[in-house]
Length: 300
Ligand code: GDP
View 1 (cartoon, rainbow, N blue to C red):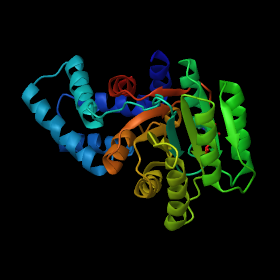
View 2: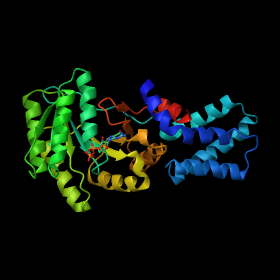
View 3: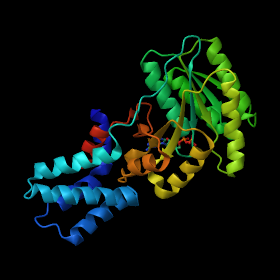
View 4: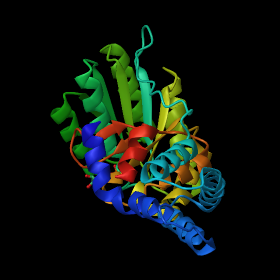
């Protein structure tokens, strides 16, 4: 948690601090409120949430009258936490069910950090004394499977991979079969994120999911989204969400952006909670997403 704060604080300072400074002005005229809205928009908050936040803050500031810095901070903190949604269910379903492992599918556009997230999530679970199997169903890039094998070795997880160009669904099937046989707790499947056409994607991911479901229910479909890609990334995320039933979002590369508002935008856009955040390239750089500490980090 301390590390999360440190990592986020480094890049999020500008956005949170700007808001605090703006709200602390003696007089808040229309221009000041426009500036506050612009700051929220620049942080990728999305148009509707930015408007809502400004509206709420305006009302609250009026009620409050004179403001101390502590008042301003508390006001903004409460509002941001409310917008991020303190009541989403962010529980990650990775627990074994009786005779079968939990199944986690990791989907998203290439380059967003899927393979890295599979490795880091494996690390978290192995650290909790769980046995993990990683399935390399991204068979289009040999490098992706090699990368996953490296992660497996690094974090102490078994890896199932197919030949280059093998059917992704057959690798996913094999990973689940082997996971059941060797009684692991969690099978994490890395998928290909080629956004060629929506039908192509649907066929491919849909097939992976159907084939996996012949043996075990899928417990989590985690959509990986690169926080640095803004609206463009959101657009692509939407396509995935239309194709598979996403249960949670992993927001990666939050360490490399001052635009933390994407959390609000993506949840609102997809109707799915952010469950995990990526804060770097290392094995321990994955954290559960918690609105309170996140907002505290944003506010610096
Ligand atoms: P994939 O194509 O979706 O599987 O993406 P990869 O897992 O190969 O990641 C693409 C690049 O992003 C790699 O260089 C990763 O090290 C990097 N990356 C992934 N997650 C994070 C993160 O949370 N923070 C940072 N800074 N880099 C990340």
